[in-house]
Image (cartoon, rainbow over all chains, first blue to last red):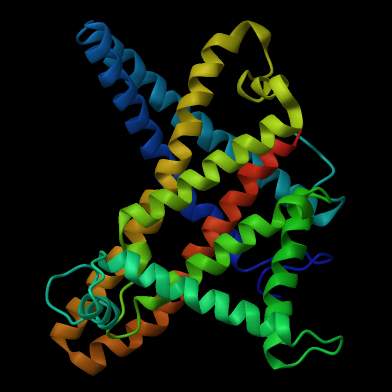
Length: 90
Length: 228
């Protein structure tokens, strides 16, 4: 089946979609951190500092996201040969 | 087609303009998609039978397949939230495909449409989380180690805010990019250049709609499950 059915959990589209989302999320997290730092600086008047701190936090958040995504994919792979994928919760 | 490039002729906005309704192009085509969905929905609903006819069969295939996929990933509680994300899929798919029809434009090639969809999804999954867990929903943001919680809250906050933004930009970038490539290929070699692209982009646009559906499902799973 195109979407993968209940008994056979393999699908053509899922891995494509999984991979397609990772890069974007990494970049966007960085920019969200940057934006938060920028506006907090403007608001509190602490010119460069919060920007730097939140930029680093954004980068960390992005990488953490990717790490979690990889862990989720690994779990899915493990779930496919044996037990139910939904039964283990991280 | 056209991806917001200035030249081509758009049918529906031109008709609306002549009646005296001034709306942007993407809003006009969003209305067309809505009209299409309502019409098909009413048609399918009116002719519901136990032994499905042609149209009903198609919809049972799509919706049944997606429901199974959703339940396989989220679990039985996926049925509560399934109807919301499947309508997102069913809405985005014709929106994307509209870009391939000459004289029409894809509403999703405009950031505003996508931002509205992504913001709705963002608010919805947070609302579901708060409804299910109450104040304990904050545990989803704290990570496993209590000592790290203040840092984790900021990190999770950033990555949750990144979700609607990346949903918006991904859909917008893909659809708009495809429209622009299509019109450029049409300028270079009208038939030979653009016809093969149609098949590629039909698939690509389908995948984008599916990605939106799947991400919505993953986010909702995150807010429905226990915190780590």
